Image 1 (cartoon, rainbow, N blue to C red):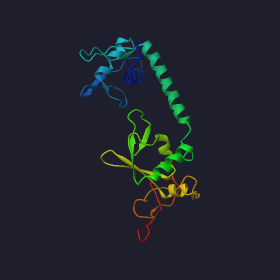
Image 2: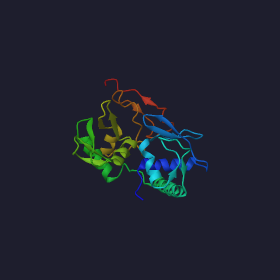
Image 3: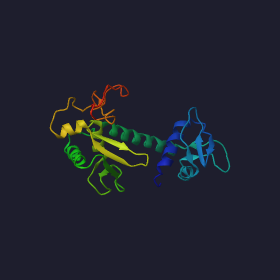
Image 4: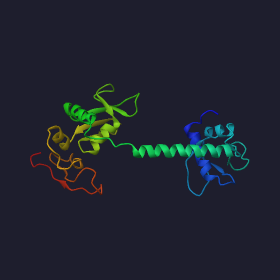
Length: 225
């Protein structure tokens, strides 16, 4: 059997969850999309997502042109759905256990220095070939993984600014400049960058990642700013 598309796999897993032995009615939503009836709302599926399950003997019953009863999962379909659920659980566990990006890694320190060399804020571009990579200055400029960028943001050492047009820029925060100068941070993970854009010297004085995240202690900017 050919491998199913991700959307067909999703449909099969959803059918396995909802079919308790009596099948599942299929109803039209809009714009060529359908949903499986159940006690709670679920995802929508395009018309073309259904035929591969029938062709592979994973489901039977309902047909868009001749509604001949509820859609039912076969024994083969339920076995495959169980395997897909197991694989999804393994991926989720691996993602949860993956080491968090380190803002003090060599890659993060190098990226911080490169951003500091540019006029602030510095333009940031995605990579057309590698989804998890960003570049400085141009699509072929200095690059680092998105995880490395995120580590610096989470540590409060850089700020990523997003424009309405879809572009983004990066700038080094006061905590980032202090780190580059070799001065110890008041907090190991830096300070919260909230309010730093209001004026020179302004900003939240709490540690980066403080809880609750929506309550800040912001100092005003310098009088001569």
